[in-house]
Every structure is written in C-alpha cells, then in structure tokens.
Amino acid sequence: MSTKDANKPKKGGLGRGLSALLNNAETDITVSSEYRAGGGVHFIDIHDIEANPFQPRTEFEEKALEELSESIKVHGLIQPVTVRKMGYDKYQLISGERRTRASILAGLTKIPAYVRIANDQEMLEMALIENIQRENLNPIEVSLSYKRLLEECSLKQEELGDRVGKDRSTVSNYLRLLRLPDEVQLALKFNKISMGHAKAILGVEDTDEQIALFRRIEKEGLSVRESEEIVKQSKAEKSGQTNAGEGTKKSVPIVFEIDDALKLKIDKLNKSLSTAVNIKPKGNKGEIVIPFKNYEDLERILSSLSEHEEL
Image: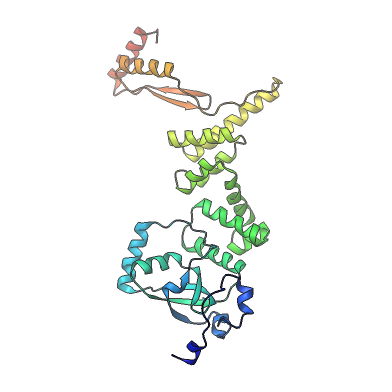
C-alpha cells in the first residue's frame, strides 16, 4: 500500500457541498491542478461515479441503450464522459449518463472521463446544454430544465437564452408549455402532439377548452393548421357575441358532441345508403361526408336519400 493510500481517510461526510470539500484537507479534490483545468482523459472506476442530480433527461429508451451497449462491447467507449471530483474515489456525472448506463450494461468496470471541478450552477448549466445539443430532449424536459436554470441559478430569460444559444422568444415559448394542463403536457412529452399543436392549444385561455381541443386533436388527428383554425374561429365567434352586446355568454364549445340519439340516426343512414357516412365536426358546426364509388353509385345514394326524407 502506498503512503498516499495509508494516509487516505475513511469515506464519509461527502454530502456537505462543494464549498465544504474545497476547504476540507481530508479530500484530494485540490491535489491535482489538471482537474481544475479540465486535464486529460482519466480511466476511473465506473462504480465510483454517481448520477447527476441536475440531469434534465429523465427517461432513456431501453432499445437505444442496448444498441449503444453492444457497440461499446465491440469498440469500447469512444467518447469520454465528463465528471466532477467530489473527494477520494468519488465523482459525479456532469454529462454522459446515457454512455455510463450503456457501459454498465456492457460490463465495463472503468471508463474514460474528463475530470473537472464545478459548482452546482455550472453542473446544471453544463448538463442542460450538453443534453440539448446531443440528446434531443422532449419539449417538456427542455421547459423544466429552463425553469430550473431561472429559479435555481437566478438567471433572467435573456441570460438563459445566451447560455443555451436561443433567443428570448424561443425560451419564453418553452416556458409557456408548463402552463398547459397535465394531460396535455404528458401528450407532448410522449410525442402524441407536436410543439405546434401545443402552441395552438395555448391560444385558448380556458383550461377546460384547452383539454377539449387537445382531445379533439388526438381523436381526429388534426394538423397544426386545422387546430389553429379552430382556435381562430372560436375567438371570432366569441368576439362577435361581445360586439353584438348580448351580455355575458357561455364560451363557445370547441368540440361538437355526437350524442346517442344522433348516433342512432347516423347508423340508420349508413344502413339505408349502404355506405359509410362520416361526420366531421368543425367548431360548433360540421360536415356530413357521404362517399360514393362512381356515378351510378351517386345516383343510387341520391335516390335513396329522396326516399327517406324522415332521416
């Protein structure tokens, strides 16, 4: 055992923060100047690395991890991770959690790493920026990370934009996503709707109407443009009510509900015409679409309609 190992203190007391460690002679955090400068690449025990508490990505696709793991088994970990030194044989990830997880799956015991000293604000900023640039975060993960930078690092939106290379309006648009109902945020997180859909939904102020519009987008597979038109139409109708001086009005329903009685009539019409009648709601209006195969089929349908006026 070396003299250094003999004098090495027992592990413990490492949870007091970086400032305490820097002033603590019982750690080797300030021994090597190469750590301060970023240094070269060091091979460190993978089990001495703890997760980054500021990691903005919360979910990793298992299949992608397995594919990366197989590549690491063949080629090794080509791109080093970045860690900060917390004490003797104690490191914390700054960036590279996906690579670290895949390395564990591949059975590696040591991995290459850049070792740095960083405070909590720098950790959060570096983790966020590294993930945005490399990992294709979903919009909600980006929004939550931006919010943390604003609140925990006391940044203004302009400063945040400078840190992540985005203009203020882009940052603002991401932060607005956190005003959406939880149901809509989850759909955006799991790519059931796009950012464009989310921005259209934000054009509706009432929470119930936001949820109603989201459910219609999901049910009917509406495009972003169709969603925007619905919001535009709803606002125009509300504005028309106000200008008409009709006093306080109930909000115009975005979703045209098809009740049981109407469903029975539609079923009856389908059987009568021997074709699939489609109802397409548009705001509080809509269309009835009756498909036909050819000219003769059209004549048959028209004749049938004239014979069933009671429908």
